[in-house]
Length: 106
Image 1: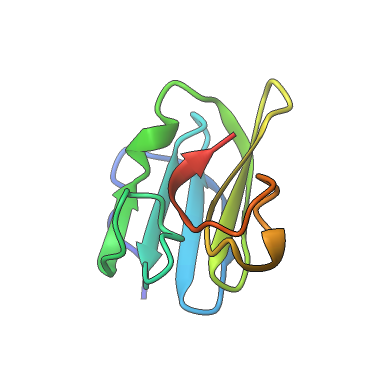
Image 2 (image 1 turned 45 degrees about the vertical axis):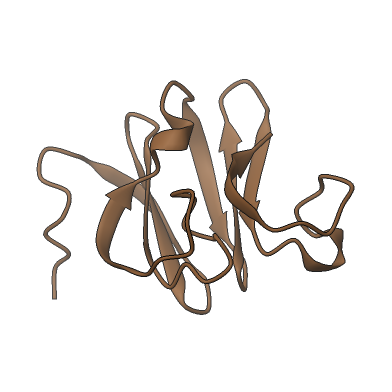
């Protein structure tokens, strides 16, 4: 079934994790939905989203690629910056700690 949550937006990429998904628009915006138990949706909480919701924390960034891991997410911006959020176990977010990130962090 077609995902109807993107009227007026041209989706250029999608990525699926274990229980969450990301979509990238041609304009560089990121949308997420699914389970947010580790903050992997990037909305500043751990709530589930049953429909795509724009990741407002990345507003002003021109994202060119997205990746969904098991319980974490990444975005690559046009300036070469890497943003990550979600489950921080094993240091997989790259921030030098084991902390979960509820919002995208450079």
